[in-house]
Length: 247
Ligand SMILES: [Ca+2]
Ligand SMILES: [Ca+2]
Ligand SMILES: [Ca+2]
Image (cartoon, rainbow, N blue to C red; front, top):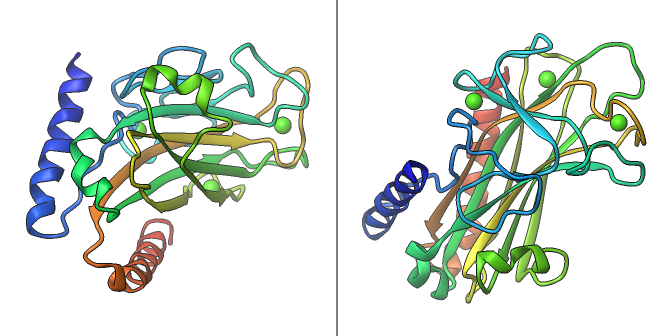
């Protein structure tokens, strides 16, 4: 209940800002895993809850401190039941309510920018996986129907990757963005730790893989002709931030 209140407030303030200046508002709920809104071992069917494969919310572990706050997400297994061969992603989903942005989306000028941070253990084991990603997808319909839609019915889907180093003191950033398709009723934000090096079928799939500080901001694209300019500016800005935080 309180979670939904926070989200409504965040969306509301974003909406107010859109009419004036290009201000930004985060529409992900508990993107920093500080209030434990992670729930089911299944695809989500309602707004503002993280749900998916087997993960746990932890404090500092494996020599890795959370990127922000006191907690972070620890990716454990590639399915809701545990380890499996042939399945390489430990994924967590959240359905994002964008109803407050309805008019902006249907004008074709709603830009969604996602950003998040990943880190993992180092060590000599050559089987340690390194790849993480954020996937942003858009759908028409109702959140309750999402489990039947996700593999085939998205209006748009983008993915941004982070390839992590073996230094536990640095966090690596992933970003991705999309122009939200006209007619989209909700977005889905997915974070993934991927077995890109070795697909374990049993036991430990990930040696110590973490994520934190996931955000999504929706802003108005000023005019079609300015889009290329705006994206160029956003790229420059994220490069500067990456250097500032990890350098
Ligand atoms: Ca956190
Ligand atoms: Ca690192
Ligand atoms: Ca693995």
